[in-house]
Image (cartoon, rainbow, N blue to C red):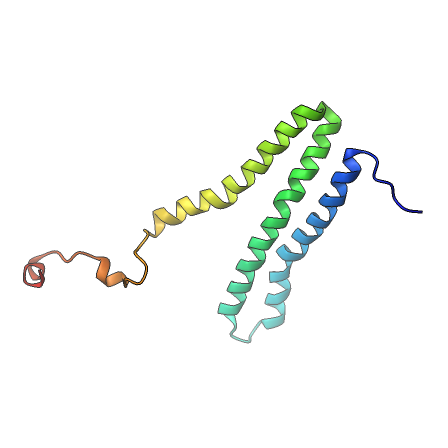
Length: 133
């Protein structure tokens, strides 16, 4: 017998479960990879792979958590407030996971023009700087 998708919570679960499984798989993959390549001096490949898995895991986790949040609130407080709450949750994830780290990164590492080496962007100062100008 086929499972009939009757209520909104049932339809949301069809999106929620694969998103949760995708998030679990991609967020746990770096630990398994670390165990497999331990001692092979593959740190750069491991860090690059872990970074990509983290980005993919967050891409799976955000809609999965938002859909679950929306379904739970739909049952508890009704349709329109649940949609507003779900939209706020979907807005919150990129704010925390993308804009916050980008702001911190800019504070730590200022933006340089592309193709210009770091030494060329610094302005010489001191007694030797007068002869260099």
